[in-house]
Structures are given as C-alpha cells and as structure tokens.
Image (tube, rainbow, N blue to C red; front, side):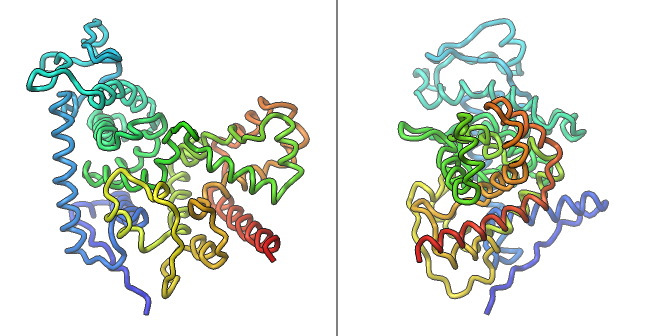
Length: 391
C-alpha cells in the first residue's frame, strides 16, 4: 500500500491574501520536495523537527556572531575586514562598510588567542558574500527592504561556517534567494537551502582531481555524443569538447536563462521528477553540510516505486546508473537546450565565442515546461540506446 503524505497545515497569519497563501503553500511544498521532512510525517512531527532546527540554526548563528558581530546585526559588509594572514584591515572604506555598534574587532578570539585557519578563511568570505547579495535579484521589490538583504547575507555566512569544506562560492546567493522569498522564517529558509546544497554542493567542491561541475560536464559530453554525434564533433572541433560553456547553467540551475518565476517552476518540476521518499532518512543519518555522492552509490531494492518521481523511476527500472549514482536531470535539461539550438550551432558557430553568443540568446527565452519535456524525451532515448549497447 502506498504511503500517505499528510498535507501541511498552513499558519493562519499567512492566509491574508492569495499571494501570501500561494507563497506559504509553495514554501512548505519545497520543504517536502527537498526532503526537509519525511513524506509520512504528521503536522506535529514536522513542528517538532522545525523547532529543533530553529534552535540549531540560532546556535550556529550565535557562534558566527561571536566571531564577527556583523552577523545578525541587520547590516552586511562588502569590503575585506582582515588580511590573508588574519590581521585587521583599517582602511577607511572597510571601516565605513563594517561599522556597527561594536568596535572593530582585532583578529583574535575572545580569549586573546590568534584566529585559527578556519575562522580566517570564513572571515575572508564575508565581504564576497555581501557583494554577491547586493547583486542578487535586485530587480525584485522584495529586496528593497534591507532586512531581506541582511537575512540572505546571514544565511550564507552561517552556511559558509558549517560547511568548511566548500564554504561560500559565487552562485550560492542565486540558489538561496528563492528560499528567503518563500519562507518567512530565516531558520526555515536556511534549512531549505542546506537541503538544496546536499544536491548541489559537489558543483562547488574543488579537489586535486576535479573541479566543481566536471562530472556533470563529462556526463553531458557523453550524452550528446550518444544522441547527436554530429553536434558533439562540431563542438569538439571548435574547442568546446569540454562543454565548459554550459558551466553557468549547472552552477545556478538556469537562474540566468529564466525569469525568477519560471526558474522556480523549473526547479519544482526537476525536484518532483527526481523525488525520492527515502532522502529524508538519508540526509538525517549523514548530518548537515554533506552529500551522498562522496559515499559512493549503492543500488537499492524497494517494494514500490510509486512515490518516486518519474525520472527517478526510469533510472531505477533501467539500472544504467553511473558509479556515482544516477545522472541528475539537470544534465538532460542542458542537453535539451543544446539539441533545441543544434541547427543554429551547426550553421552559425565558428568558434567558442559563437557558441557562447548563441546560448546567451537563450537567456530569458527558455520555456521551462518545454525544456523539462525535452529532457525527459532525451533521457528515455539515451536509456534505450544504452540498453541497446548492453544487449
């Protein structure tokens, strides 16, 4: 028997208008899609988990505030406050940007000892977070309110502290911004962002062996090579065989190619298609600021796939997953964009600049629903071809 998903109860104070109602419902649906809660959870279960997470976030935020008083002050900083060696910067611009009711703090801990490496690295990212926050979704009236900007900065600053391996990277503000818009409570928005980063943090992780989205770019190259060899060969001839021109689409999940509303719609379709009801348990077992890709992919045997998303069901049925797990649907979305523009790329592209120009023309013109439908078709075609090679 299929498990029931208990409908979320919407707080009464959010039911003041149709827009607020839609935002409240959408925010709670995102919490399910991103595995913040188990699909069988009751209202009381979710309330208990939510309160515990709010306490945890408040604890982390207080730790960050202890290290730098700008966290939680309602202000953000956009200039460096320390040097690479942890020494305070007393530049007038810095003092202007970083002035609060507290005096500028020297680079020592509360007990007078020099800052450790992790703290120095975290403080070095704070101004970069501030610069990116000021550039994020600024056409939206929502960010005319300074408290919303500071909320975004606080969440990213706290996340950078708890995820010391990845920290903060450019593009994270674009991923976090919708959480702030949809979830009024800062802690709830943080945890929604943290769950999204479980899926995407590998894109931002750099090692000696690979850089960020390299695995997804390699998957993209393999998929285009199988589905459209002519296009792949043409791109390779032009020096685009590494597919780095698709880097941005992966990093910020099409935020630049779509309007704010359409990008949210695309994200929801992606998460629904990839939905795995067991991810909540997996995330709870592994702890915050981690991802399952580093633990190796382990095939599962499930009694029923009814609650799984359509894309996830197809992967489970085909059993053609890679060593590090199924290829994310985002790879097939990028592939669908390339296929949609294949004729233009073949006829007009004479170099990397032309490839980038043609794909930049997609900005603001991408149809989210059409792109998702195209991705599913390419995925099905790819699975058939791969099955054919095995038989």
